[in-house]
Amino acid sequence: MKDVLLFLLIAFFNTTCIAQCNAALEKYAVGFEDIQSNSLSFLDNTLNEVKIVGLGEDTHGTAEFTILAGELMKYLADKQGFTILIIETGFGEGQYLNDYIQGKRDDLKNILEVHNSTWRYKTKEFHQLMNGLKVYNQNSTEKIYLYGCEMQYVISDVNRIKAYLETVGSDYKIEGFEKHLWQNIEESEKVDYYISYAKLKNYFFDNYEAFKNKTSEEAFNVAYHHIEVLGQFVTAINQNVEQRKHDFRDIYMGENIQWILNFHGDQAKVLYWAHNAHVGDWVSNGIVDVAGHQLRKLYGNAYFNIATDFGTGSFLAFSKKWEMETFSYDQVLENSFTSCLKNMGNPNTFLNFRKAKEENELTGFLNQNLTTMSGAGAQINDSQTETNEIGKAFDGIIYLDSTHKINWAE
Image 1: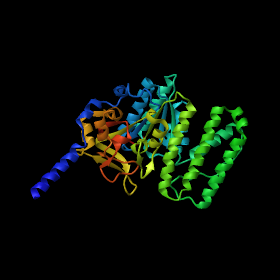
Image 2: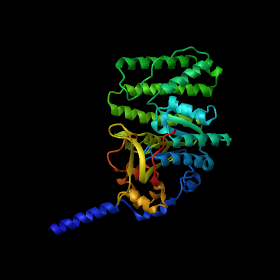
Image 3: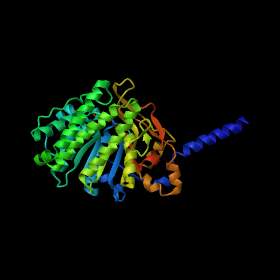
Image 4: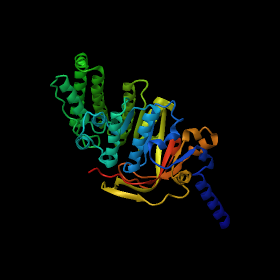
């Protein structure tokens, strides 16, 4: 009897392991060697009806994921007519970065010190990305525009509104909004923030014609959206449960992406770059219907989202004590989906989930829980692997075999 039980246990284990790979996937996989725009031709016939490409990153602190974002943007601009990059930063903060790549400013380091709330952008790789976009715009008639989609920190939105008010000759004073979403904000401060937002919104509404005539419809609409972002912030800080703040954060990320697309018109095409958790068409980051899920509801198959996974290497992240550390993985878990991707690679892999799911057998396989390597968002994850419905939540995945930590800019 014990032998029978042992046999059944081994059979179950082997079945579970085999379930992490399916040989039929290989015809939908492409191996590639270098992270360069000209290596991404596997997307040539994939994005014909797509308005938004979502690029998820498995860790924030990995150099290659930032490099990949830059090379993918270059490919999409050159080959697919994409002109907008949306990143995981504040809407107001993104405006300062856009000024840089449009050639209106030359002080990138200062922008990242004064107007940026995100640690992972103070890196050599992000500097390289920004400088690459700036050079691209200098040499191209079709410019790339950069936006943030967040509302966790809104002081940069306040500063952009102040600059607009100065342009139209207004001495209106804006009060508040110094704190961010995750700080303790007293009830009296929340009331003050709401009153400040409501008065400012009404002031712009009442002066629409005068402000538009002194600037332009476009400039007014951008300034007014900064006010709408303040409204998003006011709504989020008034949630009594922290999870609801996460909910509103992602909902507003999706709404801001929608606003950006509408602002640029029917022909606009966007690359949206954030963590896998925010890009997937799933419930993640706790129990949040994340931005990727909002985009799928809004745009259907015109949203094509790509996850990333990695094999071995190092990355930066905060420890459980919120201390910045280097973490390293030296092997890929055997019998994992990551191992499956690794074996298809040369040494890196793109696997087209959307195309594979046209086969019923592969739809069932990809809709099950799959185990991949797990790095970090801002903070290190609890395990080196995670098991979830990544094949169901994404249209494709890029596996990078060997990665390195991001490097702080000097």
